[in-house]
Each structure stands twice: as C-alpha cells, then as structure tokens.
Image 1 (cartoon, one colour):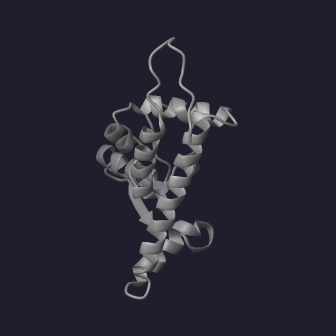
Image 2: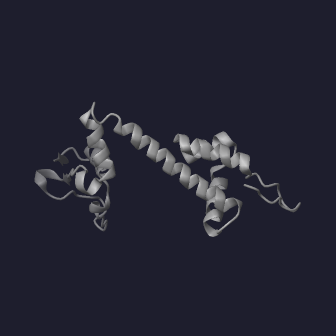
Image 3: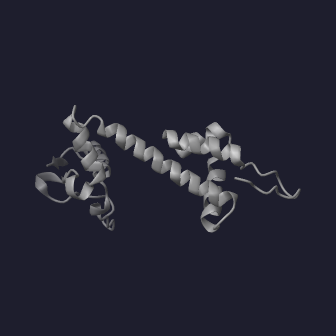
Length: 161
C-alpha cells in the first residue's frame, strides 16, 4: 500500500502503513479500540476521526484504514467463535451461551421482571408527573432499578421468571 506524502502544511500525518498494521493487528487479536489506541499512542477521538473520514471516502489512506479495521474485527469475531465452538462437546453451557448470543430471538433467555409497590400495586413516586416507559429498559437495567428501589422502598417485590 503506497501512500502519498502530504505537503508541508499542518502537522505531520501520523497514520501510515506501519501504524495501520500495528493497530489492525491489535484489533484482530480481540483488543478493544481504546486499548489499541493506547498501544499505538493515538487518542480514541483521533481514531474515531480517521474512521469517519474513511467512511466518507471511497479511496485513500483513511478509507483503507477503516476497511482494514472492519476486516480485523471480523477476523477477531470469527476466531473467538471457532475457539468457543471447540467447547461444545465438553460443556453444554458453551452451546447455550452461543445460541443465546448469536440467535437471541429464538434461543435467548426470556426473563421477565415485574416491579410493583405494596400488595402488587403501583409504585408511588415523589414526582407524580414522571411518565416512564419501563418496557424500554433492558433486563440488566430493570435489575439495577429494582436494587435501587429496594433501598428506598422496603415493600418493592422482584419477580423473575
């Protein structure tokens, strides 16, 4: 990959073939973007700018960088899934967890959490104008809310099916 040198205007371009290879290598290993940035001595906002520029271009250094990062993510995911699948014959939980994550609509957990006030009634709030749609919260968020409410209202019941 040959890159054109920039003119002498502005700061020198930090992104080059060597940095791209190093960064993409970390991503292919499964590192987080933030970790790869730190190891390559670039800031996360700089990385995001490069990715945004790459998405806006059809060719060029930033576009090649963006494509290489996306390919490295795919390689990392593929390798992790292949490793995970090695445990399918040894541990049913590996299969269950894989199916839950990969095919959530069919095989995912169907946990239901109900939060209610005393005797199953509504939860009383200080601000009666508060209109909150709890159906938009994830299971984990509802669980956290339940813990918070238990600390403030001793009669709150949690039902998990």
